[in-house]
Image (tube, rainbow, N blue to C red):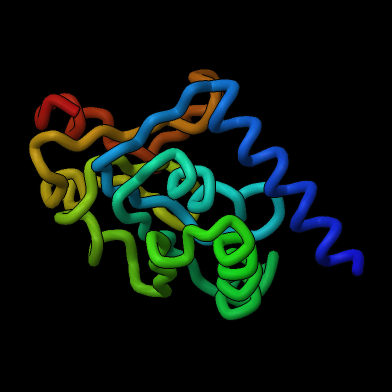
Length: 150
């Protein structure tokens, strides 16, 4: 019962975020992370905001196994009727870069290095999901982004 209650609360917050911020990702393909805790909602937010396809990459970590995180995200996706839009992958972000328009700079997607940036389509954008003062060298190659006009 507690799990269902947590899902319902999360879904209500997700829908509120998409609505309140008027997020429209229609036709977009998003690369984000498959993570635990509050980061588990990122692929679902993108899907509910109209993304055509969302790839959420993850791996086993100190916060949980990829399998358990993927199961949790699948549960949220199923409860919001967007399972068909979200792909969960334990492959590196590089494997998906050619096919996305939006990249989030969240943990399991990083580093967003020159190799990943070079693979992105010309119309891609990288969403910086932190405050500017949180920037750390090696997480996002700003020179490569600038060179590509991202």
